[in-house]
Image 1 (cartoon, rainbow, N blue to C red):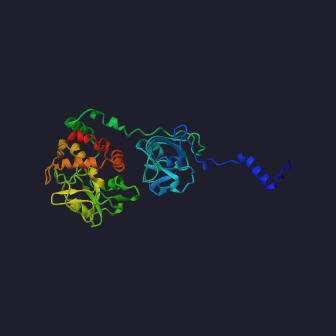
Image 2 (cartoon, rainbow, N blue to C red):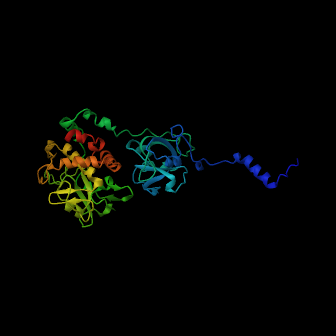
Length: 396
């Protein structure tokens, strides 16, 4: 049988195929493929495709800090709360990135404000693969380390262990364990009672941090309207935002004095005229819709906030009723099932607040706010964000 001639093109293709393994490939251009374990972590694109709320490990290059669903910043980092990873250290397309929420005990070592030189480094993280900033993400992180096998240009010395100044939540509340009813309320009061008190002027800057819009670092989110507004438009003008006392300051007549009057666990940014409409009304269902803050309703004796913050409002009032028990010259604030409480140190309606607490569960924004207040300002926590079940244990 006569063999067909071997063409020059076939020879060249065969040569290239035979020696292609000799051509070096930059590690930074290769996406990691793994099984999601610490020893064999997912690459970033793998993790993006596996947003199933399961705990997995992911490896990638630090490319910046996310500030919204579709944008990151690569310098002048405002805080240590998050970072973005990619399979390629020069990646600029956010759809090829995964956003990592950094818990408090890792921020000193992996936050970009504290460690800007981490940009370009390859790290491994373990956490829940779930949306963050409405974008593929990793949350509830339990482990973060520089990838020891990566060819990183950083200092070879190991990163210091995570800062443990934020106690484990179970440890923080250990004296309340196993209690219920009045005994639980008393125990929680003793835990959260001592805290740093702010002046009323200091509250402005604190709220610019605690209520920052995650999609726009220059704005705050207003409680009742949900509007995102420039941090610098705080004041008394018609379209400004001001400091809303969710527990109305006339209910106990504490005004803006340090303590209940400046406790940022219940102070929130609110549109000036919407704040005026709410006034010192108790909370209940029903009424006419507020024209400037659709979804909020009010009548002569009560205010109903929009659905998205009903639980937030309830948990802020639960906190106030536990924190302020009449000791140290402070008012004894209590919840009741009434409206028209006036200047009495009572707020209602308790039955409605318990319903709202159940209807609108704790979300990530509340948790973030609670952490910031604890770590940076007052150094105490809202127990009903950490343990929502305790509201029923005390008032159910």
